[in-house]
Image 1 (cartoon, one colour):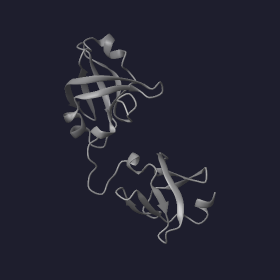
Image 2 (cartoon, one colour):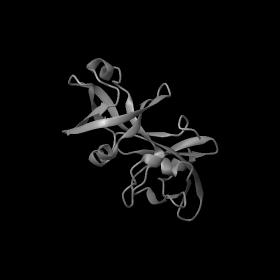
Image 3 (cartoon, rainbow, N blue to C red):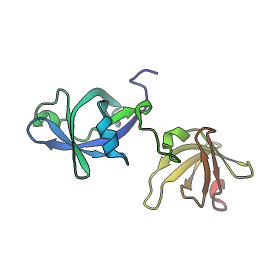
Image 4 (cartoon, rainbow, N blue to C red):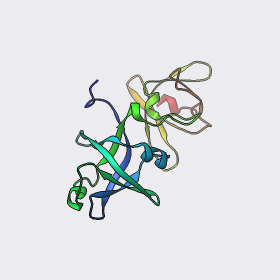
Length: 176
């Protein structure tokens, strides 16, 4: 897999220019923004809708409330910064921060087997979709998808190492 093909993880969204030196305000897309942005140097400017990515380098960062101001190498004016508005700052999956103890990234479970505690296969994990109440895990079986609310009541065990999820979905949910 080449760099152009490797999956990316968005760590921030460029909101708008800041100041006159080409800085941009960035909304962090991580639950550990200070740790992520302190370490962030080489990354990508990413436009996922167009599949557009270009390597960039963070040369300065300043934490500002819930956000961060970032200056990228070669971006030296408000006009150049404005052209980046709406793009994402991203890193390759291999550069993701290690998850905390007991946590995982959803992409680490892609393709994992989903089964009941007694071993009945419910399908395979495809992705996570957000919802107002809780994340929904999309499970695929026999070419059809169904959604499992990602709450302790229904998700009993997750093993990234074994690529296995033990679930207890509500009656009838897994047979749609």
